[in-house]
Every structure is written in C-alpha cells, then in structure tokens.
Image (cartoon, rainbow, N blue to C red; front, side, top):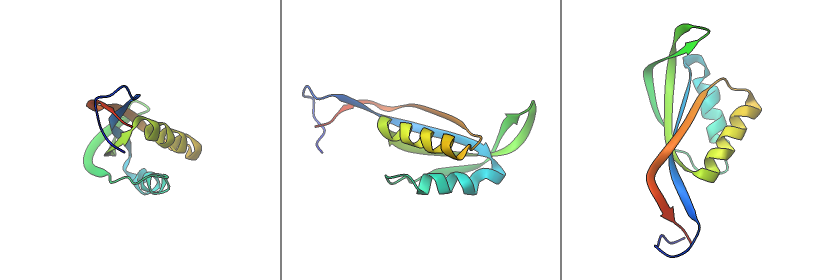
Amino acid sequence: MSVWQGAAPSVDLLAVRITVEAFQLEELLEVLADAPFPINPSIEHHTEMQVNGRSVAAVLVTFPAWESQFAEVRLRLEERRLAAVVDAAPMLGTARVQ
C-alpha cells in the first residue's frame, strides 16, 4: 500500500475512544484481541463515566484505526453486548491509498 495524492478513494484514519466501567476492561481487551487486525491500545485508568445518573470508575481505551476497522470494532462490541461509550474522530485528516 502506498500513500499518494492521486485520484484514489479517501480513507480516514480515526482516533478511536472506548470508555467502559473498570470491571469490564478485561472483556473489552478480549474483544479487541479478537479483531482481524492489530490493535495496540492505550489505557487510562483514572476516568469516570455516568451510569444511571451516577458517576462510576471507568477506563478509557484509545487506539488508531481505519474507518472500515472502526465499523468492525463497533460490530464486535454490539455482538458481545458490552456496555461502552464509543466514539471516533479523524486523526490525521484524509489519506489517499492505492
């Protein structure tokens, strides 16, 4: 694969952020380990999330992924019914791939 400025379709590299309650971290990491592409997550333990109107200890997991890979991660989280807050934002703008 080469990156260039030609007329190839654009693909977004995303910064994926997944927040889960602390006790669900192991299950989240299992979901990510089963993905068909490598994921090297960064884990931040000192965060909180709102669950039923109360603040609970949570873990923030971040990693880069291509747009198509993000869809795969979301699908796997839904299949496992893992309660998670998931979002993604463009990381580097748009790259062109051939």
